[in-house]
Amino acid sequence: MVYRRPSETPPSPCVYLCIPAPQLMGVVAAVVCSFLGTALAQFGPQCEEIKIPMCRQMPYNLTRLPNLLHHSTQENAQLAIEQFKLLGWTKCSDQLEFFLCSMYAPICTVDFVSEAIPPCRSVCEDARDGCEPLLAKFDIPWPPALACEALPWYDRGVCITPQAIISDVTPPPPKEQAPCLCQPQRGLRKRLYKKAGFHYAVRGTVKSVETFGELTLTTVAVKEVVREGRVRVATGQDGHLWTNRSCVCPSLDIDQEYLMLGWEDFANSCLLFPEGSLALPYMKKYARKIKKWEAEAAPTPVPSTSPAHYAPTPSRSQIRNIYKRKKKKKRRRRKRRRRRRRKGRITKRREQEEKIRREVTEEECKGSTATATSIVILTHRLISVTLQAVLCKYLKYHKYQFMTYY
Image (tube, rainbow, N blue to C red; front, side):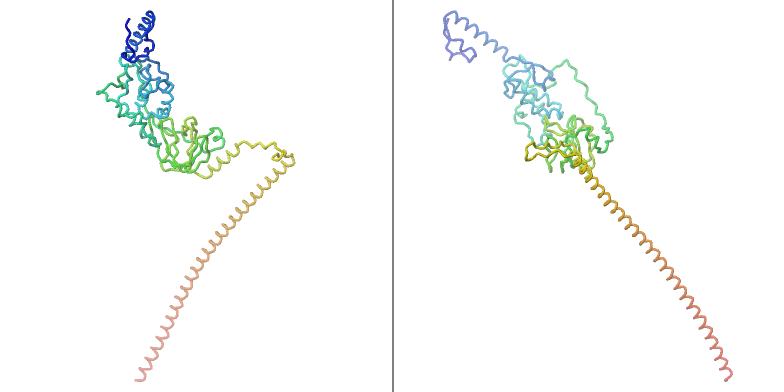
């Protein structure tokens, strides 16, 4: 049998088997090399069942590796696709899930063995246009590895779209969005606060409320952190609250200041504002109440057992004296409050009496002025009548004297 030199044969995984050997071993090696080379050329990479949880709902169930992003195992692909888990929950685009899975777990077919089939450019652009505004809110650019410019158009190359896959499963009908009906929220009470177990309480102004698919993102300008959980909230920055529905209950008004209480998702480092959360118009007394309740619920520090820091347990008489001192302080406070209230009532009564006295004085002055005016008028009339009578008598007398003289 004539053997070819390795330099004259194309690269093959069996190149180390095809070496000069005794005649029988040479025949066996040649048959094995020929069979493996034909199988690899005909079938290419093996198809695998999809194990990535995010992609198990795809219309296909077989994938091939390496994928379009050069991951050699599904475990590596799953670690890489996990970064888009939250983005998938937002439902910001109907094409996002299909696009990501066709990149990280491409469909496996017998007809195309040389390389994986990429998604069409239109699928990528639909996903990017729907989700890029949401990423921009967190200053995250669209990943360069998922650039749409490198993908082919549907009519100019080999690519795949969701419509190109025939599935026996009938897609569920689209859900009709129900109108937002929010129950009236209750006030802030200690029993409700303890029962709900809120993780955070922040004071802030609502900047925007935006809906992305089935999720709603509320952006709040945080002014004060009254209670903080494990997810850090920075004062003076924007806080992002997620609601797992398109309606936000309780309803929020833009540019309105609230005290907002809700829960958190520590695994994904995000704040949640689902139904049952509280959004109260901000008042200082609410913040004081929450701080007081948190201080009461805080565990009592255990004293150190070392001799230098050891505090003996107080006796019953000492505890009784402590309670007596507290009661005395309360009594003093009550007395001070009563004095202030009594003083305020007396001052108010005096002001009212002074006001009434002024009004009475003004009325009396007006009456006396009118009386004096009427007296002056009567006097003036009396004087004028008297003068007229005297003048008439005088004129009559002088007229008689004048007539007797002539």
